[in-house]
Length: 235
Ligand code: 6PG
Image (cartoon, rainbow, N blue to C red; front, side, top):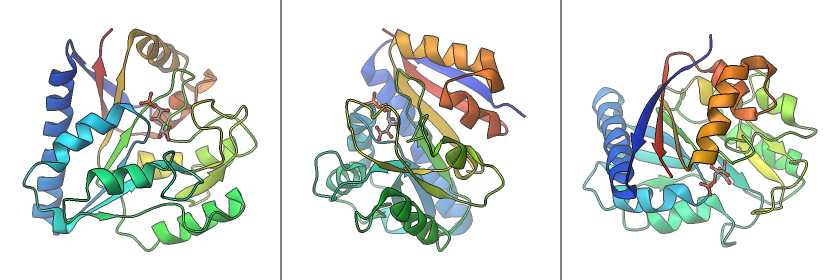
């Protein structure tokens, strides 16, 4: 059952920040009210940072919130490439718990197994998964390569896997660990946040191609049931 995307198009960065912060705030408040806690997986990369900084400044029940990256680069948390390091910095002034996916930086498949074991000890399903998307149509760290099928496998029960993208993405040419497509798809809420006309065209193509698409985002969204809001900054 392919996801039904709902476009939220913004003409200004400020409007997109406000729109995404409102959606994530609602998710946190509703999750804490309903279950006493909220567990969110947040996108890495550059797009989220200004939005997350605005979110971190809000007076929310952070002591009941666990944050993790939707995926990460297999580097030490002190490395500028680390998504967990970015979350730890942005949310350092709050009581939120930041849960890295990367422990020891062993072989990438071992890191994936360790992340999966850690996630099997967490409250599930996730309350929110916030995805980004690259211009190549990857999302989280679901990339073409030897681990692509494992990352998309809906039947394995895996919540995280190690990934060696082929080719390595130039902005972060390292092995990765990622939430799997089923881990993303079973979240209570999945949102996509991206900017630019190129990415809009890529997503439109991916949605039109569906299961035939070469874009990973198409295959991840194919597993999502229900509505997936796309917060998009035009231009
Ligand atoms: C990562 C992200 C990745 C990101 C896209 C878009 O670790 O790189 O999780 O999936 O969302 O690459 O990144 P930008 O927002 O920087 O374009």
